[in-house]
Image (cartoon, rainbow, N blue to C red; front, side, top):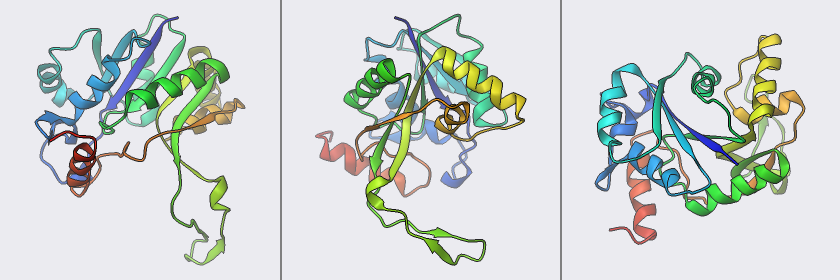
Length: 226
């Protein structure tokens, strides 16, 4: 079995309020992107890693990730779906397509492997955690119209993993429908393929705003990293 991981890192990161890519920010002595790639490079079930980035970040990414094998690069598109497809086009063939946000550097080996195993069995799987808050549905005026049962709600994260042929068919259907999805699970759900949630780690946060850096540092400290 041959599996390919796509690490998405082409976002502008405007909410981080940083002049450079948030993936190049320091997190306890390592950049965010290096921590993310390092997590996937340790998994022997993954044969290649494609890092999707902006053209302006390519040389910096290559410098930071110079010590890692089996990594290739491609440029992002205008949307997430386009960025993933730019990477998919570089893959000759694979069994599982593993899609992960480059801004989630605290992903654990167990979370990756558990999601891979579920995708092998079910064809489509994604890491997630049960929501802690009560969720409200509101209308356009912000009036609460519904309160979903919290026990049925999962906050979906990445990795999101799919059989390669399933993902390709889902993309073709979306193109025919003129749809562009911001979530890969939703893309595959639109194709009619059920996606199975794998309960992961609450520490698998996404680095999005300045407040996330000290939070990530706290998580690393809890995990024993000084």
